[in-house]
Image (cartoon, rainbow, N blue to C red; front, side):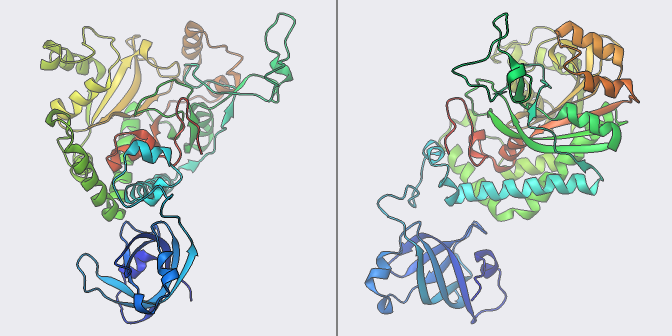
Length: 477
């Protein structure tokens, strides 16, 4: 008999027919009640075993974590908390689980402990819910762009270009590290390396994405990116996924419109599709917050926060206006900020971003027209000569979630900017070609997918929203 998913059994409209379910035992009570979960839903289905007619040896093997197959009749449940249950007529142990050694026992585990067992943590309610939400969000990303006629482009993971100009990249080499070939002046001879030049793992697919947008009109990338930034924080990963649309003929304001529409679409899609998982994650967050001091607790519950983003137009404010607001704010005047805003040109920190969203505007905020000297070389220089057409989207509880800009389409201006910060023209000859041949205004943005998953699930550590986190000093699994 073909097995039926637990989700489908719980949503069934007919009872008193024979079914087969397969999954993993969450709990086994009174030698009679199995809580069975197969990953299709946050909910378990109760399977009632006829223990008097089941061999003792089999009952002993029904332990937390064991994989089992149950066949029986789907009936309306007499117990509270579930609509249906299975009256088991046949039970088969598919895979034993040593109750003494299985780490995921049915009790509360710390998130740190679960990170150390990332290969098994997805068997818990919380991580099952997070990964289902992540999956639906990823689907929504593709659906949004495909519906809008964007072309999905796979940009290279191995690259010779540093898109951010920050230099925090993982080097890729096949050279023998214990016997590196050297040039006559003692430098490493990369001509003898696999690609014949110095290469790295990508920090962004943006530059290649721009090249494709200048032929296909509107494209998006959605793939892994890597930063060798030694940031051991709850907001940083060394390997993460980036969503990067690039659109020809879009200016900065078109870019803001696209980003706002995109974010609201994928969040709404996920809220509609993942109601049970999000309700569970909201409860988990409320429990977690009880242990925090009142001042550190979220002002909004999870679903309220998601609806806050869906129901409010994003407030658009220039960097110059934002700095004035922050400079004259009570926490700045009373020196409550860790980073006091003293003058125009300061780089906004998470505390400033959250103040603008949560306290001042009480809506998501898009800050635009940043000082040129704190932004990347490819951002379009404004007519004032001191700001660039950049924009960041700020969210409650998280700060910046999207960074984007109108790209510098003027070859002479781009060359001058590259010269000032020391980027070699020869290294980016192909990128400059897009300005030499049929250049036009174009814009795009980058959204760190894990930041989005963090926001939608209400988790507070980015390591808990990716299956196997890669962080400084940790590449387990």
